[in-house]
Every structure is written in structure tokens, then in C-alpha cells.
Image (cartoon, rainbow, N blue to C red; front, side, top):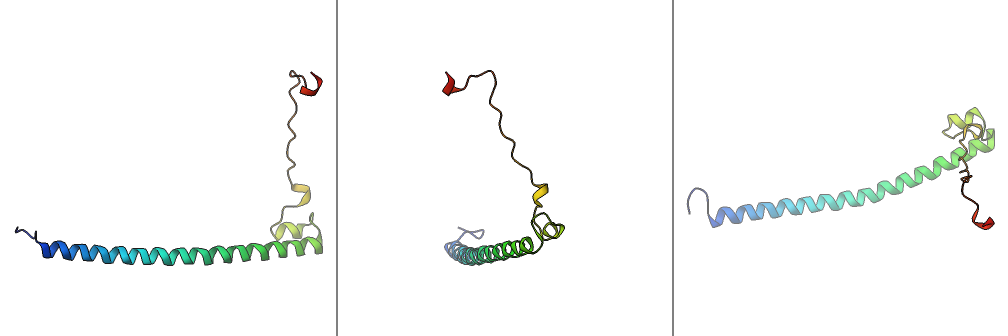
Length: 96
């Protein structure tokens, strides 16, 4: 057909694209496997962090400055959830 349009050029580009897709899929598979390993490492680190924080709490208490330095939230600094107040204008269903 001329101007670089040939079955050979088309076939070569198809093969090049197929090789790129294979390389891409191999990279994705490797990243998926690495993601699993990374998640396991993060879980292990989280468990060790929790144990260490508990150790600090046992040694110094949950309201100590050491507990805060170790990454805990001091007992006296924790926010307590606000209790929702019942609407005064609506009667309680059990009283109706």
C-alpha cells in the first residue's frame, strides 16, 4: 500500500504491543504480590506498636506523659462522645 503501510509493519507493531502488554501484566503481578507482603509487614508493625504502647501503659499508666510520648492518647485528654439529648417537644414513644 506504500507509505509504511504493510502487513509486515502491522505485524511487527502487533508483536511489539503484545510484548509491552506481557511486560505490563508481569509488573502488575509483581506489584500485587509486593502489596500483600507490604500489608503483612504493616500489620506486624501495628501489632508490635500496640504491644509496646501497652507496655508503656503498664509501666507508667495511661494518663502519663510517657504514654503520650509513646503515641498514646492520655486518658485525661480523650474526648467523650456527646450523648444525644431527646427532643423535648416529642413525647417518648413508651409514654404515649
